[in-house]
Length: 430
Image 1 (cartoon, helix red, strand yellow):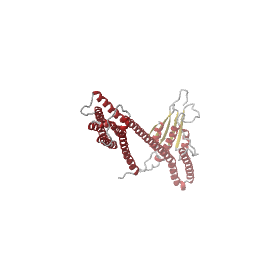
Image 2 (cartoon, rainbow, N blue to C red):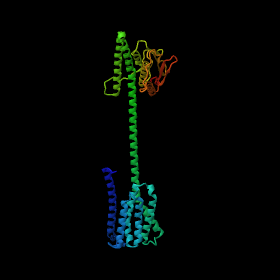
Image 3 (cartoon, helix red, strand yellow):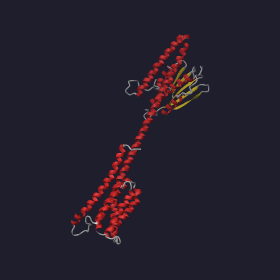
Image 4 (cartoon, one colour):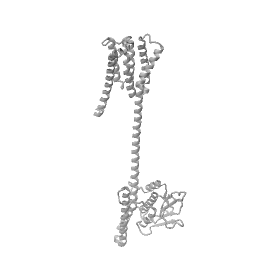
C-alpha cells in the first residue's frame, strides 16, 4: 500500500536528518584534523607529533572519521551496532598508529557523543545498557593506549583510571541530554494520553447525558400519549356508538374530546417549553396540587374516578405535598396520570379511586386503585409492548420514591407510591 504524501515526506525528512547529522560530524572531524597543526603551534613548549596531511596516518584518521559518520547515519535504526563501531574505531586507530595518529585520535570522540545521544533518544535505555557499558570499556582502552603510546604497555593504573573517567564522561555527555529529551517526550506522551482519555470520558458523559435526556423525553411523551390520547380514543369509540342512539351523550363526549385535546396541547406546549429555553411557553412543573384537576378531567362517566385527599389535622388550606421536592411532585403527578391511563386501557368500565394521603410527617402516599373491569378488555399488541410500569419505576427511582403495584384481592389493581419529604433543618425550615 502506497503511503500518503504527508507520511512519505516525513520519512524523507527523517532520512535527510540522519545524513545531515553524519555529514556535520564528518566535516567537523576533518576540519579539526586540518586545524590541529595550527592549534599545536600555539603551544611550542609542548610539541605534539601530528600526522602530516596526505600521510598514511592522516588518511587512517580520515577513514576512521568516515566510518564513524556512517555509524551516525544509522544510529537510530541500528543503535547497538553503531555504538560498538564508534567505540571500536578509536581503539583501532590508537592501536594501529602508535605515533602521530594517536595525537589525532581525540577527534574521534565527537561521533561517540552524537551516536550515544541519537541512539538513546530513539531507543529505550534498558535495551542499550549493556552496549553502553561495553562502549565505555572500549573507549577507556583507547584512551589508555593513546596515553601510553603503545598497545603492549597501556600505562600505569593512574593512567587507566583517568582513561576510564574520560570514557565515562564522553558517554555521559551524549547520554544525559538524551535521557532528558526522552523523559520529556514520555511526559508529553502521557499528557496527550491523559487528554485523549479525558476527551473520551467527556464524550462518554455527553452520550450518557443525551441518552438520559432521550429517555426523559420518551417518558414524558409516553405519559402524554397514554393518558390523553388513549382517553380521546376511548371517548371517540363511545361517541361512535352513541351518535345515533343517544345524541345528547354523544355531544357530551365530543365536548370531553375537545377538552382532552386542549389539555394535551397544553401539556405538549409545556414539554416543548422545557426543551427550548427561548420558547415563551409555560415551563412550570406540575405538582401534587394539580392531581384533583387531573382526576376531575378524567374521561368517562362522572363518578367513575373519585378522589380522596387526606390531610393532617390543622393542615388548613396549605398546598399538597409540603416539603416534597418539585421533581418528586412531578413524578407523583405523572405516575397518577399513567395509572389512570392504564385503568382506562386495561380495565375499561372499572371504578377507580385516587387517594392522596398527606398526613405522614415523612412521606406523602399516592394510591390509585381500580376494581374489576365491566367491559371487554382489548387484547394487547405483542409487537408493541407497553412501557407504563417501566416508566413509573424509572420516575420513582429518580426521586428516591417507593413504588408498589399489583393485583388486589377483589380482582382489581393497585398502584401505591410513597414520596419522601425533605428533612427539616434545626430552625424548622426544609
